Image 1 (cartoon, one colour):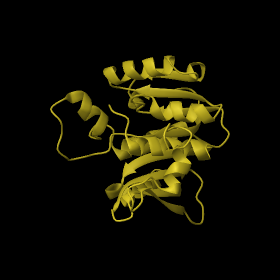
Image 2: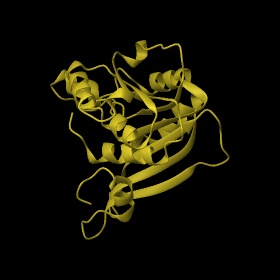
Image 3: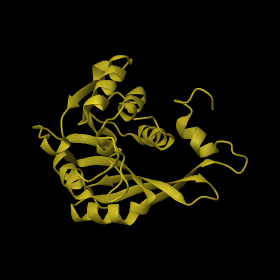
Image 4: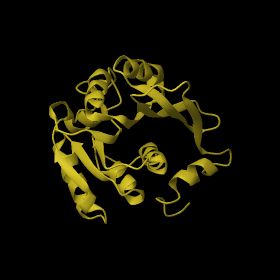
Length: 218
């Protein structure tokens, strides 16, 4: 799977607000992008789990080639069958997005992009079981699933603390939502907007702030 702008922004957004923690879990690690971005800025240990064999091999190679390989533990497994005897301070995920939409003819791409196997209901139930009481779960989703995501999360005892609405430009509708969930309910969720490019087709200040430590030419 290719590294995308929205996944990079999500990794940076999480890393920039990452609270102090002992152990984090990255669900559906793909290339290892999110874990590597978080590890660059935070001293936490990270378990990263991936089900697709080719993705796992690439992820393992990327992690082993990095400066943070001693703090990232690659796990080849299905999150549904993953039952450690400990819980996590932080969980993050850029999961399969799409349900009931047109698929590729390549099964590995379908596994990475489509949530027919890992539905929101299954994901949030698993998150509730794996997350510490004071923990935080970060999630990237398409904008059209905003209210559905919040509703399903609430039904499994997880409350939206914060979300960032992501737009390609000031003239575009939102296309991604970045969430932070907790088991503890707050009086009101915090909402921010991040626009990737301005009217001159240049990266905005908000985008540069988040990605300046990762992109070489900002």
